[in-house]
Image (cartoon, rainbow, N blue to C red):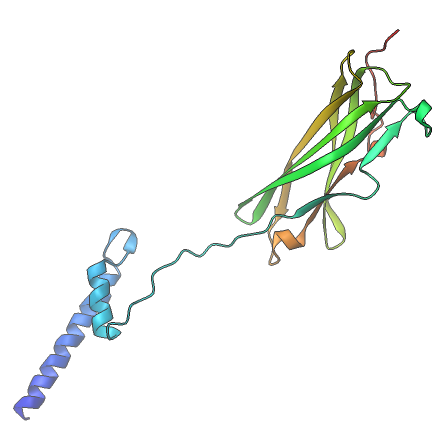
Length: 205
């Protein structure tokens, strides 16, 4: 064997030994198994011809929050007759909001409903119950429905009062489809869902 060939073999053996040491070290060095910057630089030089290795990136999935709207025909209701002179009181939804948080394979949704109760000509100040319903649909089917009776008090000196309802018990499974597309939140007033939709505790004489 010529001297030049022998030197080449020794050099290749040394490179292989160093590379093997670096790869072995990568498995156990650094806190939490992270590779030190020195080892990374040596690896880039020996194995990747000084090509920079890609930085480690955290992979996270961002899910959309389901849209919320008022179900047609349920934005308002009245009690006490069809004509204006026969109305005792009426309620209406003015605004809705939702907040979504993911935990594991579930999405927790908090739904808020804001509205107002007004007395009619035959109405009297007192305490009333507004039947707010929160529902969730997916692929045309109702997967969640809850009646949330909300107490509203109109004082003696007034003829109306605002109400706010919050339902924080909506939990939706996260599937292959984004929850923002898979589900739709619907809210409304459902007087048929509760027979206690307008009990008054006080009356003027």
